[in-house]
Image (cartoon, rainbow, N blue to C red; front, side):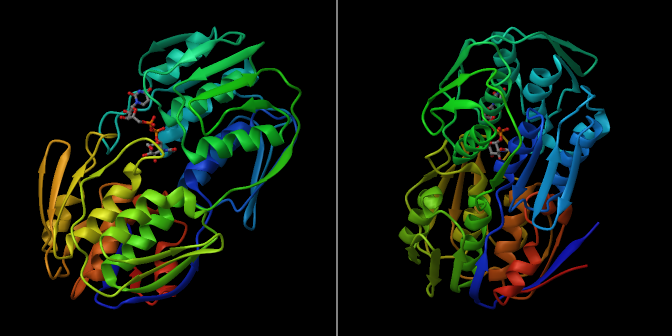
Length: 415
Ligand code: UD1
């Protein structure tokens, strides 16, 4: 079990290239299963969730290996259709393999993912999409068995779930006829999945809007794709610089995917410049409180950026209200931030952050991926030494958090 030791109080300076997006690459790796050929995924981040996905692909009979910054997956002859509990548990979002396995193999067996550290994580919308496509779903003994030849259908999601939209798209690619997904999630990661599926020969359109159409059973082949930069990693590094002060430049990121986050930071007093080549942030004064930050499906403020931004606002001169509308238990970083001197009151979905002039080092524990990143951001802006345990949570989504932050001048090491 690793711990980060952070000596805070130094401004961040310099430039970092942001690695490929976790939430784009996970459904793309599941999509590789649909193509009877070799897929090369460039800019594929080396994360524990990605390694778990490669293990699942191997278990299903695919060749899946890392080659430098890329991974190569060959699903010419998959043989498996069940994912054992041990592999399902390694990665929370492994349910994303359901639609692709069922579509390619005609059956699928997975254990149902349990609750997670963000609260209950139901998959009812994933399953109703599979049922709408004609799949039979049996839920028994904590497991899921799905079977059937899929046929195109009109799927109406009761809320724009990212994972359910992706699973519906992945299943619909193998279905006979046309599928329409209404109230689809509009996240950039859905657009990435469409772009990848199209590169494999699939006929998918509408991603980025609320209605996605898939013409199933187009002949598929292998393909090559480059994963765009991770907008949440970028948001984390901007929040780190806002907390520690200084001037940083992030390259490789599409600023349009981050505009709600940069808007809040600008309002709080940071100088933010976004160009097609880079996002630059300068922060030389305590942050001011901003109007309420409400998390919402894209293009609203991303729930994954809420914890790092809260850490930044915890050190400042004003009051900011956060309203978490996506997940139930997404304030587990709050008590840990309080150990560092933050003044934050939580009631239900609402957290009120009263900025304090100084945070101080403490021993704190990461309870989830983005909450852990928030503690690191706060530690960089705190006086003294902070020990952040639970680093394995951060390894799910940050390829080398300590390396990137050290390149910006942070004193951080993993022990
Ligand atoms: C994805 C992201 C995660 C991000 C989230 C919201 C991945 C791997 N993860 O998660 O980082 O925080 O989007 O942007 O891409 N829900 C149901 N029933 C379902 C599915 C979801 O009620 O069948 C609810 C969830 O409990 C949650 C809300 O819908 O309250 C949004 O969840 P969803 O968009 O599905 O998030 P994920 O795909 O799990």
